[in-house]
Image (cartoon, rainbow, N blue to C red; front, side, top):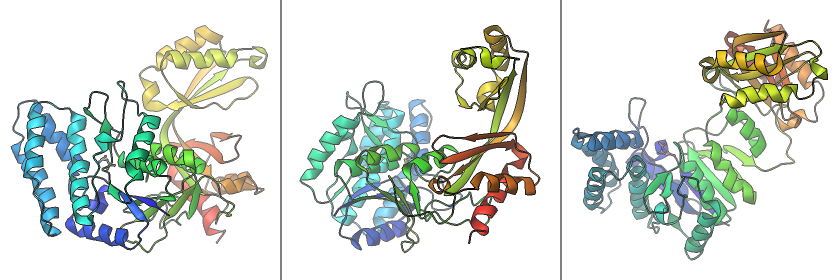
Length: 439
Ligand code: ASP
């Protein structure tokens, strides 16, 4: 049995947090491969080390004074080293970092040093071998992650090591320079390592006890999600539920390895299990409800639209030509609507309207801005009758006008479009009907 454990920035923000992490790792001998993030915020006013590194690098390459920020970064790390009572001197590392900043080693190099240094400290503190991620995680010339090459190398390197610390967030380009994943990318590294060692479980330790059925900023004290499938998570994450980096599920998914989101500050909480599939019935009919504001509907009308073959394709081509991705496309017999992100659409709206006129000669093109989309997601909806009825009854009861409905063929989600100002009440109404009344 082996587990890969990734710890986020807030779990490693101070010596005190490092101690909690060591206790978690030593409590379970199967926690053998450790992926640290860079030190995050110690409190609400603090700055993440990754952000300090970006600032410091930008100042250094533009000839401004950077020494003060560099000292601030150094202090973050020496405070941790001293607080843990380690016999570890980071002077050499910091001299190298400064030299490389002045040589313009790149913003990615700069940002990656938070994970790199935390990895060195963690390895020293645990007595585990340290593996620099630059030696085992690879990108191609265009910056795309090379999954198979990485998997082979990691598997090879780790096959002879029962334990190791591998810093998150970065790898290397073909020329040896450093490249990072997008922000929050240590989650991705953890998943890559879990796949490479065929881990039994990928534990992702953060500062919340997993996913919640709804956003706690909208619903008071929402219920936790015990188990969620990868697919459900994709739907909810896309709609704004952010605990895990979006790309983190792909590597483990290839091998069917579950992810367990856990809370470093409450290690007794079971957290959320993210799995390929499960026969366990969800607690409630819905797994979660999430959404986003800021959509615009483009409603196109034309009599006898249904007889015109290629109508939809020609309309969508207009969006493609303007480089706008569309989110949903509900349609009627003589009408179709395209939902897009308002901010992406607004600057191009006149070109799109003109393009639609030219492409399909509609009777009218009408715009409806300021819409929100609410996604009701759940594998349990497939077998439950009356789910849609309950959603719409709850919305009607809350006096919310439904602007659009879209149910995916997977029956995994129902998307409801409402006015922006109805977004929060809609989420609350749906939460209440499924969670409060199902208790
Ligand atoms: N330290 C990086 C960031 O702040 C990566 C991570 O924490 O996963 O985005």
